[in-house]
Length: 129
Image (cartoon, rainbow, N blue to C red; front, top):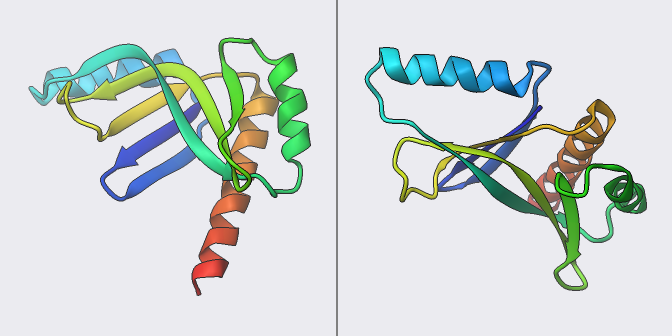
C-alpha cells in the first residue's frame, strides 16, 4: 500500500506493508473512538517526478502492466512527469486540501514508485543545498 500525506507544505509518500482495508478500518475506528469526523471517498491523487529521472522508462513500462485504473503517467512539460493514482481519500474536513490518500497496486509497482519518489526527493534536497 502507498500512503500519501498531503499537508500545507507538500506531501510525503510512504510504502506500507499493511493491507489497505486493514489500515482504513483502523483509521475509522480511531476516528470513532476520538469523536473526530472522518470522510472516506474514492478519489485520485497526483504528484510530479522529474522527467530526467533514471528508470523513468521502467515506470512507463510498469504503467502498461498495472491495472489501467491504478496508475497513469502524463507529461507535464520538458521538466516533469505527473504520476496519477486512483485510491481512497481520507480527511476530517471535506473541503480541506490536507489529508491522506491511500492506494494499492502490485508490490513491485508500489516499491518501485516509492523508490523513484525517494530518488527525486534526494535530488531536490541536494539541489537546494
